[in-house]
Structure formats: C-alpha cells, structure tokens
Image 1 (spheres, rainbow, N blue to C red):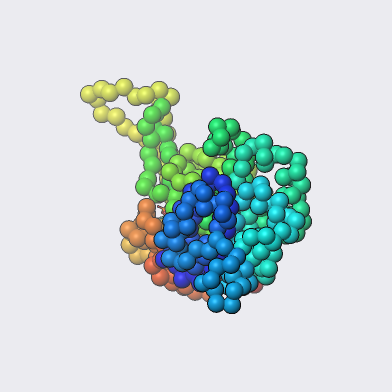
Image 2: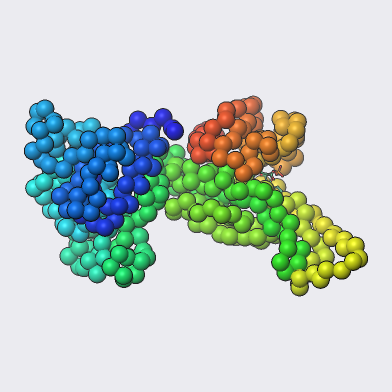
Length: 395
Ligand code: PMT
C-alpha cells in the first residue's frame, strides 16, 4: 500500500457499468486513496450502496437531504473534502445535466459547488454516445475544462459493438494516478526497451531469458504519468501496455535495435531496461530441426549493443542504462557506465530484480551513488523518472 492521502469523490450514475465501479473503488482504496461514494437514485437500481460502503469503508450518500451531515449541506461538505471528483459511470443524462449546470440532486449539486478538478467517464450505448445532442454536451464539458476519460470501444451490454462503453477499472485507476503526478517530462519524448529478447534457433525454438518486462513497463508508466510521450519497444511479455504508451512488439535483439533506431530520431531520452541477449544463433534453421542421434551444435554470434549504439549517435538522446549483475554489483555496473559512455546507470542484482514485483537499485551518475531501497517497481520507476527529470533540468 502506498502512502497516498488524496480523497476521491466517486460519483456513480445510472448505467450497467456501475458494477465496474465496485472494482475501481477497491483499486483506489488499495492504493491508499480515501474514496467517498455518492450515488444517484438510478445508480442504486444497478448496484446497492452497501457494496460501495463495504469496499470504501465510508458511508455512501445518495440524498441531498441526508441527515448524517450536521450542517445540512452535504453538497458543500462532500465537495470541499475532495481532491478530485470522478463520475464513473457518467450516463448521457448526467453529462447533459453537468454541461448545463444542473443542480437538482446531490451529485449534480456537489459538482456545481466544487472547487476541485472534475473527471468524467462516460458509459452508454453506441447510438447514445454518437447522438449529436450528446456530442454537443461533451464538447461543452471539454470547453469547461472537464476531463473526459474514454469512452472505450468494444462489446456493449446491449449487444452492440463500438464506442461508448466505460473504460475498464484498471484504466480509470491509471488515469486517476496520472492526474495527480507532477509533470516534469511534459513535452519530452522517451523511448524505452523492456522485457527479454527471443533469439530463434529454428522455426519453433529459441533462446530467451526470464525478464518479465515489469521494470520496463513500470518505467513507461511513470514516464507517461510525468507527462512524456512514450514509445515502449518490448520483447515478448505477458503484460498489458500502460495507457497512452505506443508499444512496438519485437522478438530478437536485431529487431529491437531496428525498432529503436526508427523511433530515436526525435527522442529526448532513451532508457534501456530490456534484458537483451548478448548472442544470436548463427546457424539458424528456417524449419523445425529434426531429432536425430547425432550431436547438434548451435553457434552463437554477438548481438549489437543497442544502448551503446544509441549513446554513440551524433545527436544522442539522454541515455539511461541498466546493469543486472549477480555479483560485484557496483564495480561491474560502474565499468559498464564508463564503457558505454552514458550519464546514468541503474544497477540491480539479478536475484533481486528479475521477474519480481519489487526491486532495489543504485543509481550511478557523475555525482556518485544514489541507493533506492527495496520498493515496488512502480515506486522505483517514479523515483528514477524524477531523477532523470532533475538531471535533464540541470543540464
Ligand atoms: O523485466 P523484469 O523481470 O522486471 O526484470 C528487470 C531487469 C532485471 C531485466 C532490469 O531491471 C535490468 O536490469 N535490465 C538490464 C538487464 C541486462 O541485460 O543488463 P546488461 O548488464 O546485460 O546490459 C546493460 C545495459 O545494456 C542494459 O541497459 C541493456 O538493456 C543494454 N544492452 C545490453 C546488451 C545489448 N546487446 N544491448 C543493450 O542495449
């Protein structure tokens, strides 16, 4: 659990997607947010307030005349305590009300009385979303500086397929997190490599390693949170791309190098997190190698070093390397930094880092060593991005 002291007022309006807001509440509470749920009457037809009360650990409000607030002004008290209001799901009717400043129930009244940011996650059928009147209302909300999250595209409860469904709880959670992070990389372009590479032996077999991609993906997400445009060149992993990231899937180190070189022209920062295979198979077979009793020799040939190649480009971006060692961490890592001529290197122990959810690293730069104690990769990633932004700002 992170130490997050933000309060989100989660407004739930009438839509089937209200059931997804139960999961969203759980994700926010788990990350340390205080979640204050306010529901419209229509929302309570879909999911009962007791569900949200149990998940948020807070009383749920539905009624403007609720006697539990001593001064009789729940719309003022509730909006005053919130760092942000998120309406999810936001029905077409609620968008209409918001865009016209309506104040005829608790949720619409507290939205009009707020002095904090408002985020809305529309959820409706395709035709309702595309309806010109609805689009006019959405445009008005945008003009008023209200953040419209989504909607997503896909299968809908009514059986149609298209735009209009609410974003998934994990996506909304990511967007809320992004919203609260400082933006020191605003306007910067970042290219990140992540995961393992896969060096084919024949049509079905290959050499790879146990990098999960978690560290690289966490850094991609932290860079997005910090306001950057991010391209993630990823070897094979089981992870979903963070929202807003341009992911390019690759297999071998050669593919990874080509993809990186195509993207690097306009990049300000390059972060090499991938566990790139040092060797590729030289005598690779087009077809599946047949089993036989004879010995089989696989010849290996060195792969290009992607990080060193990028660092030696004439207009090289700010380069960050990783060093995964199983012993003599600082000595080997420092040698790597000097050999590859990069300003910042992140040293970690293979046994701590590979595949794990946590990591423990030492940042090495010209100023010396900066240890980041064991923490979830998400937190290590945020601290690394903060360090990179500070180094860039002082260049
Ligand atoms: O993916 P996870 O399970 O979350 O694990 C994270 C990690 C352990 C893979 C990650 O934290 C890490 O340490 N990545 C670098 C692993 C590595 O291969 O280090 P290296 O010492 O071999 O390479 C040094 C640097 O050069 C790295 O930035 C690497 O991306 C880069 N490199 C290496 C070889 C090569 N041919 N091209 C490269 O660009």
